[in-house]
Image 1: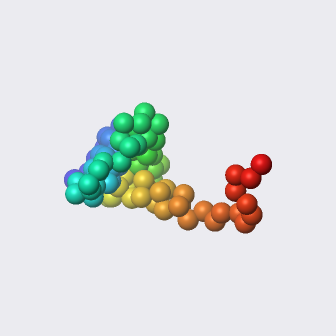
Image 2: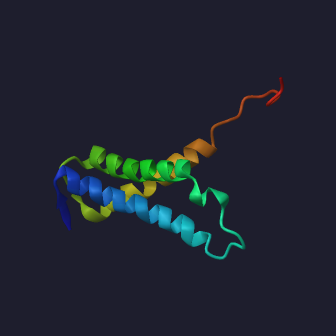
Image 3: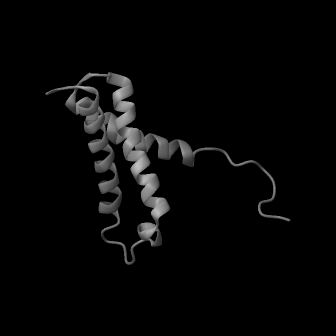
Length: 99
């Protein structure tokens, strides 16, 4: 299925970002206790930003016309790639929190 229009491509990418977030919560379904951040406005703000990033990157890649499944894949992968990049940043050597 071909998706046409900037908002349509962006929207399909965003749906992919939502699926990535749903997978995160699906993996927590058997946890004894849900994480404390589930009620944090900061967490949900970042989550919305990551979903929007999935839509933005899909739009950036494809512009006004894209295969729907490919735009969806880009939307899913963008938050996951960004998360991996953030966790793989090397930490500088030295003491932390020392005054």
